[in-house]
Image (cartoon, rainbow over all chains, first blue to last red; front, side, top):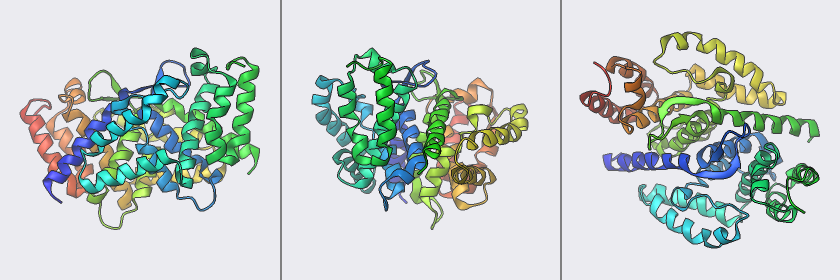
Length: 196
Length: 196
């Protein structure tokens, strides 16, 4: 193992510490502050372990976990994009592609390709693993919202229609979890946490 | 899949959100605040992916990642124990065992046993996977310390002897990474970040 290789890996390990400073719109459950993207990534990776049995049969859970660990790294440069902000979403792909190009290039080429492939797979949402990972990413945000009085929904005036469109990611990638989520959303609508 | 089973899993997913409020002694690299145990768990799981090639041959990296995702859950009840605080370390095992008993019991029995087994394995440090995971847990703290001017070492007056004793975990579980760490510690000592 060359010393330069290890130095690159350590430099990358240090660089990704910055994901802890990227804030999301969701609040953590005690409502004391916004969630950051590093702790969110841990939470959703844990949910992959907890909810693996609801994934389509034959799915590689280890790959789901790895995908979820790396899925938000690009936010170090690109920032978190609020999924209900249409203007921000319009430039998201270009911002994140640029971020991926810079960040993964810090690693030795083989490892850069490996992590980049995980991120590309997550983004493309073609494989069952990517679709399940994306469903959990969405589910985690809904879980925090319904347990913080609809914190980010209310703050940003999100409508029931917008939420229902968004959570199609869950119906698509984790259909077994859909009835649960549908119940949460109807309940949130009844409580007035999301607009009509 | 019974509804009750899923409700237990979701209740657990919600409960573990609290790990985001458990603060460690280490600072994140921009030195703006202390690190919390949820984002630390993500960081060290990422380091397992990045540094897997330095593990003893034949090791199950997926198991290392799962172990690192769950290794600090008990801190939700037991708090983070600073490894250089002898008084706190004395009561740590009892506090954490009590925490594990309460927390994992929130889950369906089969899953409680599975996560508990991962945590027990990490703590016992007998398998190559547990020893490598523990080495990375220690390495991550050292990495943050040497990149924040020895933040927690200086703040708590930690000596070179204490650090060298502690990092035996790295020499033991990830010997290939030991020369790197040894260099960092000698450098930190030369800079006066750790006492004699």
